[in-house]
Length: 342
Image (cartoon, rainbow, N blue to C red; front, top):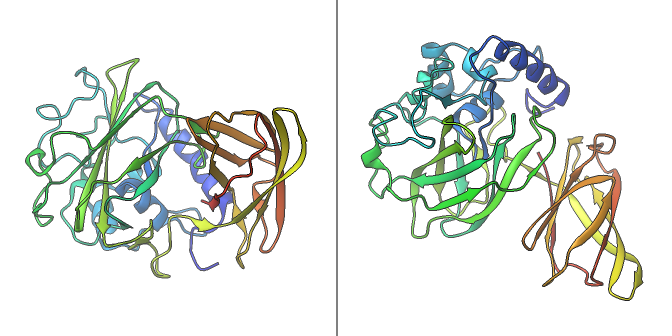
């Protein structure tokens, strides 16, 4: 393996350890942005070793550990605050210079407020539409709001509210999700256009406000607008890996009837490494709905259809394939279908 955190068995062990650590905490963990990756999540990925320890290689992640210890890395999904403020508290609730830690009262996340140009960064294209993902360690109703730094933001100084645009560039209330809570492969997702006319280094700031309590979760995602499509740099000793790796999906109609059809989708791993989990998505034709699906978990949000792997077909060795099936009220074959592996 080229990356030290390549085995999902290790992830499962760390997830179990995180659950143990959380059992003594004042609240359960809830989630963090994984696309575009938050500092806590990407430093967690950067640090996973073959022994199950978390030993970051990134200098900024190392500085965070020096300041706050490794507990925040094992609990990367817990940057939250529930001090009784109105849900979604921002200016006047989270102090300047403590935005990335959320001024958390769960653990000491202050290391993630450290000023550094070395944080892992996600490379994006200004104005492009991407699928944001927010890990669903625990499921709650609520609203996700995404803010971005103003042009001219100075990353050599602590992040303040004056550095942020006051209006979120996108918000999503109770978005669809896939996977079971408590898993690294479970997440909420929504498609959103990135701000236009942005160049260079910026910060995307996420605020997840629960609607069933005052508890709110915060995260800083370091991004660079340079024409990228989601690549992450600054992780691991093996160079800049992408946040996801491509798999391939082909859609074939196997039978039809008046007003509907059955289809089979073949998912293939074209790489030379084993893939652990896959997600297939495509845009549905006008008015099309998915009636049923098998060998995968289906979600439909408007015109976007998403199917994620089941437990028994999530592991794809190099060059291997698996299939899932579905029925719809249409006989249309998607003109574009995409596949990604975490």
